[in-house]
Image 1: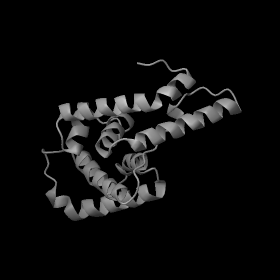
Image 2 (image 1 turned 180 degrees about the horizontal axis):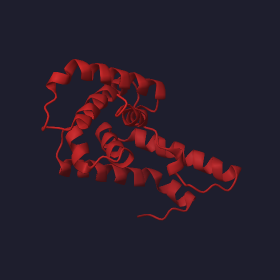
Image 3 (image 1 turned 30 degrees about the vertical axis):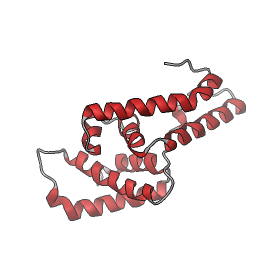
Image 4 (image 1 turned 90 degrees about the horizontal axis):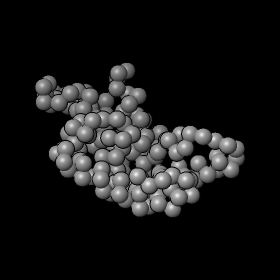
Length: 163
């Protein structure tokens, strides 16, 4: 638990946008991991990847019961701050990005969070999502395209040039 809890919790918070619910998912993950540990096959998947899969399924179950949401770190939206106006701009931008990520289809959102926010490799993220690497790349491309379209006006307001 000590080795994996912090990252699992961060992933669950990003997918659920609710720290308390993420704690519940983590607790459920470790209980389920204990119960189904005999199903893990060494050599077929790393234990951490297998554990992420259990947590991801827990997040999916909770998201199905409510409107999907996915948070984004506000620090990632512009590191410079020049006073209250800039702070308000950054808060609005962070909210817009959170809403845009939450509006993505579930699989695109999961791919985006696992690869970009959690730093998993494409192979690891694809394995967790039980898809091929090319399928993951396709999900990521569609997610990025959708975010560019949704956030186009925000990007212009914030002075971010298009990629």
